[in-house]
Amino acid sequence: MVKFFGKEACDLYIDRIKNAVRIANNDIGFQTIPRLSLRYLSNFKLELLDSLVSADYEKYRYKTVYPSKGTDIEKKALKDEDYHVLNENFKTKMLYRALAGSEGYAKCFVTAEYMFSILKEDNNLDYTSVVAGYLKSIEQLIYRIVMINVDKATEEDNYWIKGCYPKNRKDASYMSRKHPKTHRDQVRFLKKNTKYFDIEMGPLIWCLYDNDIYRVSDAGIEIIHDFLRRYSDECRNEHFHKDNIEDFNTVEKIRNNTHMLMYFLLGGCKLTGDPEEDKTALGFAHTSYDVLYKRIQSLPRSVSRFHIQFDNEIIRARRLFDQPDTVYDENGSFRSALSFVYEENYNEEREENGKADIIISAENMPRKMWYEVYGGEKFEIQW
Image (cartoon, rainbow, N blue to C red; front, side, top):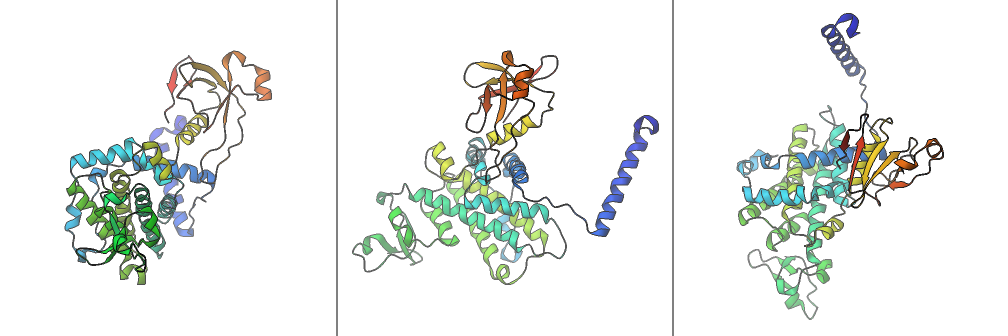
């Protein structure tokens, strides 16, 4: 078309066709909503993680849902040194990946994000279910952080949490007390007492605050604590329970606050003390293979030459044209392997029988990898 009519005319034609299709779709009420298949779930999670790690959280501010409660909280922000700690843990140590992992809070968060993506500003809909998903994800993450910390708590720490210890136990006077200020019942923050804990959102928020679980400055702790208390209050007040949420702006505010609090909680709370154990405790999503698999499979089939480094040696290999069918696990992660043969072994017979020399999988990841294009130029594959 460009050859006969010119680029300007073609662009105008395409714009008008797109506009006509949009108007027609609006008239007939047609919209394509992606089904959350394992294939789509895998792509959705990777895109979500990309957005989480690239977000500029220093610019995030708490957005008040109910201004009648005061808007001064919207002006609060942490210090630069706190953001350095938060970014180091959330981004550099990749704790953000926990939000697409296997724990309940991650499933709630991903589901809420999916619902948000398909229900954007639809008229006459109730968004309460989306908000409930965000609230539940924060509740469950706080609970998980509390449980990680109680595993290492000792009696010498002298930590406490709201709860009710049996008064007829001989050690009741040692294991329980009245809070010095509120006079509410508390139990010692110990693993053997977990069945006596009050695990509603309010007491869990105070547990983080009272028991040296944060790793930011004292001023930062006060701000995060204020945010969590306001968030809990705004999402659990009478309006939330008795009325529908039909204002999409309210959902956007709660989503903003949820993203910000996820960043503060994962980046700003003490965990096991061991980076690898932290990943296990949080139900970490190991997405490196997902990214590598997707990037290799997105390359044209004509790109067959690769350079693969497992240890110190770099291997020259060919990608087989026919690869195993794509298989996903229950979380939407790729389980299929990628098949290669050594360059010196490559021939038509090996291509036909599909016998591989090298298998790359989630269990057998290379340290580095490059693909080679016509002319011999190499490009590193990042994951």
